[in-house]
Amino acid sequence: AILTSKGEESANEASPAAANNIILMPVADDPNVAFKCWFKAGSQNDPKGKAGLASLTASMLTESGTKQLRYDEILGKLYPMAGSYGASVDKEMTVVTGLIHRDKVNEFYSLYTEAILNPGFRIEDFERLRDRAINNIEKSLRYSSDEEQGKAVLYSTIFRGTPYESYTDGAVESLRSMTIDDVKAFYKQYFTKENITIAIGGAYAPEVTERHRADLQRLPEGKVETVSV
Image (tube, rainbow, N blue to C red; front, side):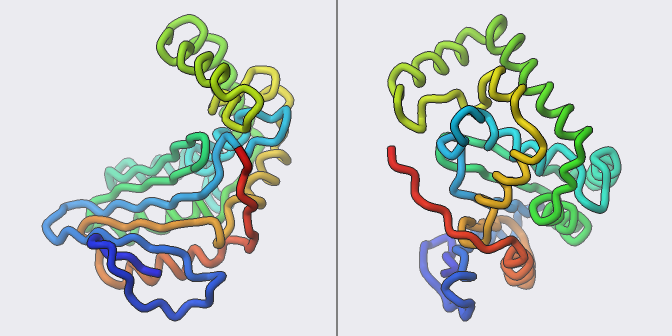
């Protein structure tokens, strides 16, 4: 179903497996266009002994290269158009967000969708992002962020024995044990066209909606089982 900002459904002729929800919030006088892709996979889906894999996979999509471009080349294209995209990961979800001025949508759109559809999964990007995640836990979390450390301990205590127990960004030991193949497997399992909701807001042209939905049908198929808490 396609949902408007008022929550009303409109017709969608796609097959049930391909009929991802699209949430539309048009704002004609907004100078920007915002994209969001919500995947129902978060830290609760991290395999045993691989805490932080969801977060690391999201970083590999939005802070590394694609199959066609290295990360420095992507940054070189984004900077002049003042565009950006990134990801946030929680216990139950991963959201990939993009923001661009409406006059630069076409230039930005390809970079944004390629990051989701065709990640490069280069080993040098993996090692850089894995090492950064380890450093953030060893240095920032432990020694300079009392609030975040306290929250991590609190959640671990409250949710002990459940999929919510682990810290979203992972644990040092589990991050060190991860390989690029772990990231590829997580991406293949959870970043599927049956597991996504799309949102577009701002001053976008009507054809952007169908183009975005159609392009994301290139994601692999795969139904994700609900995690029992």
